[in-house]
Length: 130
View (cartoon, rainbow, N blue to C red):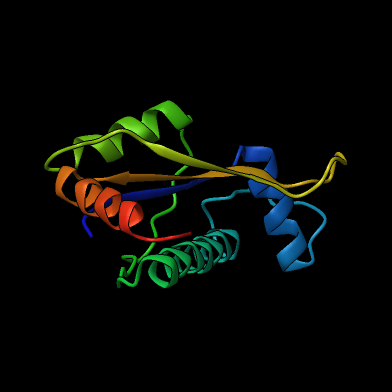
């Protein structure tokens, strides 16, 4: 499979997640250590779990590349990811929610398969009972 994946958290959710995992009251800079490596590891774990679920359901093998961390508006991130692809396709979004309190995690996983990969996935989904 070829394409891209973006795990997106609003800045407040990323800061909350980093604080929870690092046992800190606040994080001064999400792009500085140790917050940045913590958030990259969360991205790696979530991307791997997401792709493993696809692998199990569709009997295929997909591996994520090492994660990058950036602090930018969602639209800018999606545009950048699409521009890096050979044949950009529609975006598939899976929203994440960690509760209804003010200390909850919000985010989304965006899957941007390239044209050939999208066609392959649609063929597999059409032939599988999920």
